[in-house]
Image (spheres, rainbow, N blue to C red):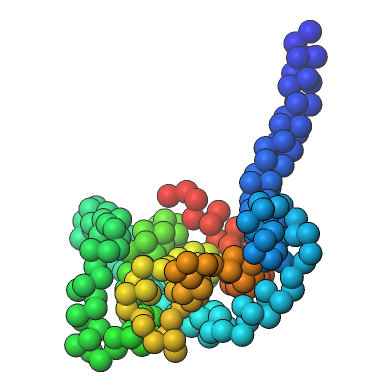
Length: 277
């Protein structure tokens, strides 16, 4: 009897897993599918609340591309990727110093992370003033610098678990061969952290790509505005072309989905490599 009960419970586990996976996929894909559907709707179809366009309007995609959308996508990609790279350049030595040399004691990592948890609106005025004093206000390099510095805390927090897994014996062996601290960090630690750097870099880049508040306040020129800002500018005061807005949103999703598909294995392996501390 016990064996039958165990066999029955084992048979139900795959079914439960499939059901949960189906619900997760439905919750993820249905909004995207409806967004694609809206991108082909006319204003009358949207107002009628249809799920599928009665008469598809591919002109919405042409109208979306005719504005500054591509420039916004390009600016978002530049700010996201360059900001993530600069974040990692700062975060790797910081995480290494915290874990290996106990810099700042046990509370430094939490102290560094705590300002990142504050609402970003509190930093808008100081950042605006600092960028203006550096002549970087309303520029893409200035926004990239802000993104890089604002995400250092979360990158250090994520990298801390990975750096703790690197054996201290590797440092000692390299130092016996005459390598200094900087050489150990560059030649030994950084290559070992490659999967973690990919995972954390993707996370930080996605955070930069989706950020709206700082981009809205710090960039006013079309040459520096990012995708979220460009999308909000498509909202009319009285009448909004939701088909055009949905088409622009789908176009903005393409780089994120492409990056997720391309780096999927590296992202999963990098996150699981630092899952234990």
